[in-house]
Length: 140
Image: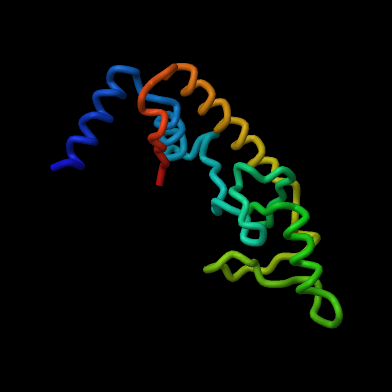
């Protein structure tokens, strides 16, 4: 079917161009190597900003990435005044608690974002004026 054709085209491109960097990262991720990091969330649960666009990222102990000002304001408004110093993580489907003390600069995320930017830049440079510029590929 059509899906099979798309896969065949992708396979042909990979053979033609060699395995692209995204696939190399995927292989390293599956092996648990240095490229294994990926943030568990795609956007800040408070501000709604895509993680790639967050200017001052912090993360909680489980690795969820937030916009610093947004999450600090959230924690302040959900703690204190007899409620203790922790509150529920604002991401749906999570059950862990967060506190001001548990928020740290998102160093792994910042490194990951730099690698993603480099991969995108090298991909743009290698593609040049390719007509597929509007195709966005995301990994699962």
